[in-house]
Image 1 (tube, rainbow, N blue to C red):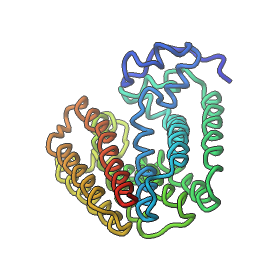
Image 2 (image 1 turned 45 degrees about the vertical axis):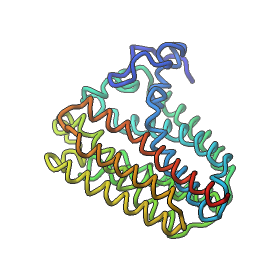
Image 3 (image 1 turned 30 degrees about the vertical axis):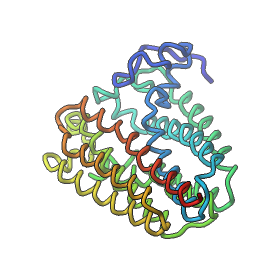
Image 4 (image 1 turned 60 degrees about the vertical axis):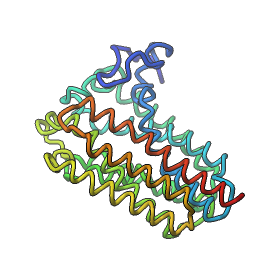
Length: 314
């Protein structure tokens, strides 16, 4: 599986001097880059809706906090499925990645990994995700399989719509349904509204991310909300982040959350407001920094929800 790879150096926008490039053997580095192991922001963004949903479920059930076993499973699953998703995306986008400055050094267009090797690696990561999914109740397992539809169609959307970030939101926010389902074995309005809020949040942060590539995207015909919004990106961000905040607050109301949860949402709203105000769409480095800061936002909401569950239980 792994033989025949060649390490021609890190991806252009990879984290410098990361353990992937300093600790892993040369044959393994292209696979780690395919899975974006040197960029944990991706699996954090996939994990947070799971954690928020599990925490709101704990509040609704008057439990002391989210199930630790579920959180551990979601973490493993997020790392595995984010890696699988990136590998799949790179297989689909090989022709586009080869034309974009930031992505042409990725393992497939750079020739570090063959398409056959990438497909085998994709299957291995998906198998890990499947083993994680099978630890949950039947309803959650079926719900997890349903998530494959938005995951499968997302890479093609940048070719046909100005709203590929919407489809990323459908895929990346799916955990908002999973955490609740894992606890209750069913869904209600609370996780559905949390899911809607997660979609708005995802469109916002990925619009920031997409501004790094807008010039190259225009040349190769790739569509995005960054290109769609253009100079109106800041007002669009304020609208999207406001909608996300209101929907998260409504989900908390429906879960019968208390002051700590709403304090977390309020502090998170200030963080999103900061992103919107300081954003410079022509500064690629700053766009990447603001995009990554959404890990902090995830922690703010999660801590508020967990504290609220603990306070209620005590």
